[in-house]
Image (tube, rainbow, N blue to C red; front, side, top):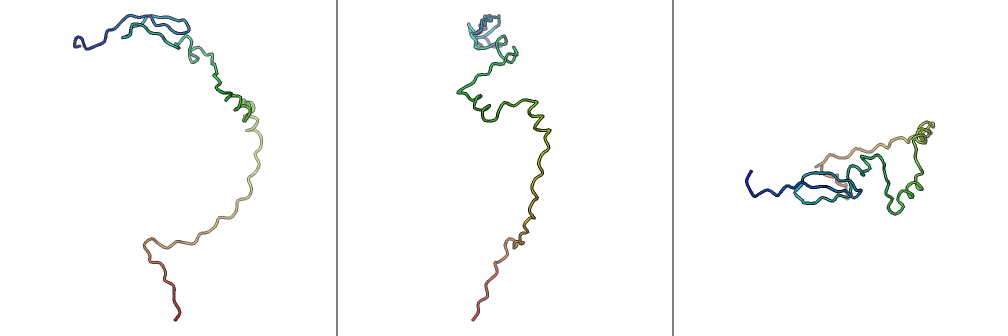
Length: 108
């Protein structure tokens, strides 16, 4: 490696907002983190739902609380038969592209 072109590498103690600390190496002298594996919901299994402006309540009010049992009950109900379909409309064939339009006959 070329000398004096790389940043300094320090032994630092990383600190999370939850209070967890650990030793690591970094180019910064101090590491202050907002979230770590000790407090992140993915790693802890404790999911905390952040509700902004009542969005969750509006959703449950509009669609209702959905559960697996409710979905199974809806799927088990016999569905109504759809109405008889109308006969398809038959379209007249179009003239091929580039064909001259028919001229109208004039009476003299």
